[in-house]
Image 1: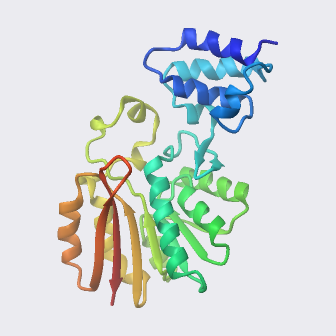
Image 2: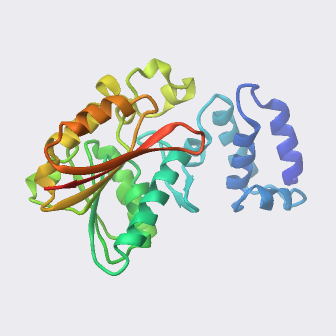
Length: 280
């Protein structure tokens, strides 16, 4: 069998110029059951595992299929999750969102139980990551797409966490089941014009999970019905589009609750998160 170094060099020579070398390196990591790039670099002299499978996967990668779909795996906060064309590939910005939620929960709910819903869960990475870190919490997750929920349920079983999944649009499943929560987390669709996303995203990732009328359709839906899913107080953590601060501020200011809120930036310097606390 060929050495990993030989396979890598041969694949790199054939790699389409539009495909990042990092994607090829990630494929090499996955195809050899390695943990990271550093382990790959230390294993170049070893034999390539499943070479025939690697070259089959490489063909898909070289056509532009995202490497996470090629390998059916995406890393999120150090954990592996199954992903395929039914769900979005988790982004680093969403990792930042979950880390900020995690810090807030540690600070405010360290010694008391709480309930949380992940609205528009997709692959389930938000709900599952929080369920792993807060085993005593009651975690719900909703999605309108049955196929996406199948992926999320698989990931929950894989990580052996208890998340209660519901199918339905935004808050409707909670309202229908008279469920109240303390915290809402959501990374809903917020792309107003799909033609503005990267070509690979447009070609391969599910449009239902990306596109929203005027970009803020789903935030408006959530905030319109928010009073039906909490008793006295609720915290909301959103990932948002970088151009939506002004319009979302207008909507928040019209809410008839006592409120505290602020926007924050991602590591790229773009406005990306909205944190909102409402009290009746």
